Length: 421
Image (cartoon, rainbow, N blue to C red; front, side, top):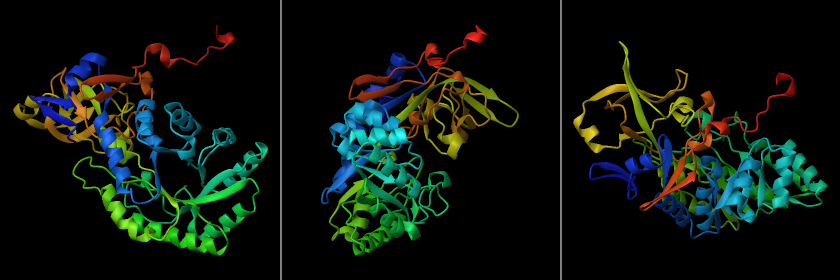
């Protein structure tokens, strides 16, 4: 991660020492590199420059509107999964005609909002949803553009919680039922079929499952031609992995090289849905050591960040590298086996378990790496902890793109009924 590096013994984001960020906004906080975000998006987009395409950033990975505005200015579209994400996308300046709406549980209100916003299309996940979209579109006297999401039953070889393309998954329509559901769609007067969608999972370390699933979808496209359904958009999903520890994930160029031969005769616009691969390694969680604690069988390093700030280690058993902000600490201090834990009242509250690292002193700063994706976007107020600030660094500039919450924010919207007063 060249945008995060030691300079003169201090860990920096671009040209700003993390120590200065801590002084400016306190800890814990999320820190994003502007340069890294730009480079990652441009790299992905450029890999497919030879084919008509939309790079629809998966907003769930990191939904801060400053990040979305930056990507909108780069020409990104958006992959959304809720009405709230649609609102964020529109507020950030993303073009509705480059927005696709996925998710298995769209409500009537969300469908109506998306239709009124004139988004590009819905990725339809079930026959029941298809009928609901047809009904709501009829109420608005409009037609809804849709792509049916097909579940190709391909193992993405990733964590089961982020595998979405297997037969047992809640996502998509089974490949065996695909043609029948497309036939159903053709009978609905408020539905316009424009595409096919597939997405098999996240944090993919190999392109082979991607290729295998795409072949199944291309076979379906040929079958659809036989019943008079012409596909204008082929949404191939996202899911490319990033490096958290020692993984060597495929790059966008590897994916382009693998799938391009399959697409050479295809006359439709491709849609990609990268999320983690754009923002994951562009973000760091900055935290401060509060205490050291040693039990007979375990040594703990207690920090001010917790599972409510970054839940991935607790939820997925995910690995995040942790770096001392002062390089001398890493070089001078003996490494010991520790658990890095937070203040939340749960045994599952940890950022690292059984990690060999320098035992930091109270006040030392630590950088939890690769935290740009599914970090703040999955944060909560559990234990009535305040959600933390987000900072965007651009060369030597520090921009606070989300302020730290204050105590009154915790009860905003709550009411004590009159009978309790």
